[in-house]
Image 1 (cartoon, one colour):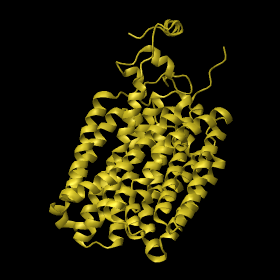
Image 2 (image 1 turned 180 degrees about the horizontal axis):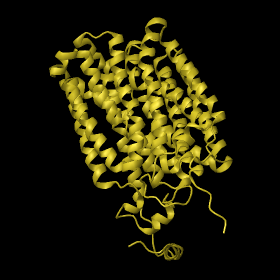
Image 3 (image 1 turned 135 degrees about the vertical axis):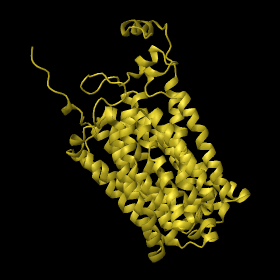
Image 4 (image 1 turned 90 degrees about the vertical axis):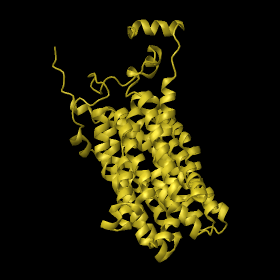
Length: 455
């Protein structure tokens, strides 16, 4: 039984009760869960050379196959966010990981599926990729929901950095893992192993994570007091992490902050999808690296993300404490996106491979430095419906990102790789500029609260 809040405060003040540290274990699992989508996003980019040569797919066909993942990922963001708010991220994420682990493994047997005879081999690959993307769509908005529940309001940026750490670690390890297993046992085995890894972590998520700290048997009252969990809405009405009603869509779609946040995120996401899809091939073709070297250097953007994500979370929270929510989140995004644009524009024009790759990779790191403030702002604007707003934002970002593999392939083949990266740099600057109109200090749930009658 949970002790009375006054008794808990006395115990903490007297030093009789030490807070447990379950929140950090949950954040560690958030990191791992966000490593797994790299297996789906990046695997075809790494195996693509072998698949393309074996089945004689053209560059344009590979572009559509790479984009199929993004289409599934984009279309299911909206229901992913709603499901997380309605049913809780524990159940929703477990089912989604099991789903995409199955279809990751299915990539290994696409050529022998009856589907390949009915609609053709390229479309079969694209359809399975679509289904992998649909499952992975549930990860990001439900991770934001977990962070909003398990971290105090003053550490939302730092909490979101665990999500970005997973993206960085997964992106850093996946190219090396896929390239090594592909060289040793072939590209089919790499997909079998990817599916197995995802399946095992789905079980770990189900058996350890809870939707809120209050639901976890190992969390003591001191940790609950330390977290100040969001057990009430902006209006002070009690909730249990599951939405008591529909998300405030009217308030969201009427908000200039939400529209500019989404448009800015679409520009930022286009840039990152280059690294998830074409970067390995860029290293192999434009920079002339071998498969193994491309696998090694292909990890560099994600190592940069791994290093800069916690810095971005820390900087965002510090800026919020110093300047307030609006200026604090804006400052973090301006720094991240301006640095990203500059590094990409310079890096793509340097002939020295090592220096060029390091600069371009750092551009990815600063992109994700800024990304933390986007997700933290979703929690700032709609604390009780963070999964719904972040799902909407990520859906639009994924739709924009879906154009990246197609446009990048077209621009690179028609005008050269420098032009393709120049477009990414320009969009990064546009993303930064849109933040002049984003007010993270708004609370869109306030208008849901009826005014209290005067006594």
